[in-house]
Image (cartoon, rainbow, N blue to C red; front, side, top):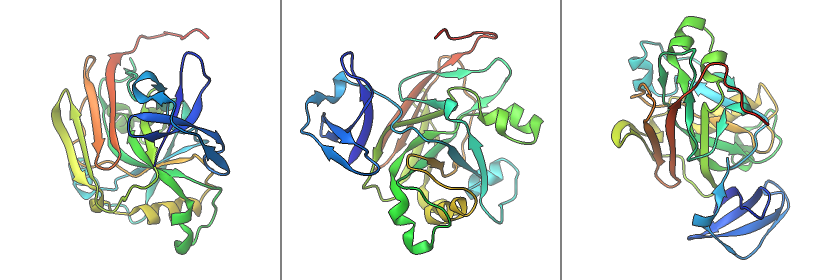
Length: 261
């Protein structure tokens, strides 16, 4: 089942479920007790939002061997985790803003896991019950700042640096799904999720041994080889077989620009 967050000109942000090209409202907590109503909206008439509201975004570095090689790094012995702030979240269709502080911003296509329930010190047999579903992410990175700083908070943390969506697929099989990334229709990244160094269950187990995972939290599972520079005017399209497509244009940011409330 595909779960979305959406709004219309007449309704506040709501959760819904997709039936072909129609959307029905979900009342209650989609991560707990809820009720599905019959589809009443056309998918094309809705503004789709980021599909969940995580308290934190946990990301994984160096989780595909080909990407490790292209970055001239060594494989980690344990998962390499870092955090992206929720303010990086961006819905499908909205623009990635290139910050003036960076001269090289790159795309990173990734499979994202959405957590279903409060979880700490999970056991292997309980990991699947902690997964709500899967979606698509772009771990946008200011590569020059990442290399300059040594740690990754600034390079990964700019506003708009985590496009996520367009929906959550609750019946997705992550064992062998194709991930592709195209920029202006030119193929940049392509691999299968089977090539992960640490698999989904290992990543969730490890993360839950460090911090409490909450409903709606997101874990980005790493990017394959082929990361590349983004320029103003580009359009980034990430496709994961079994989920769909996450598409975002790219624009230049302006120094000292402040969005009014």
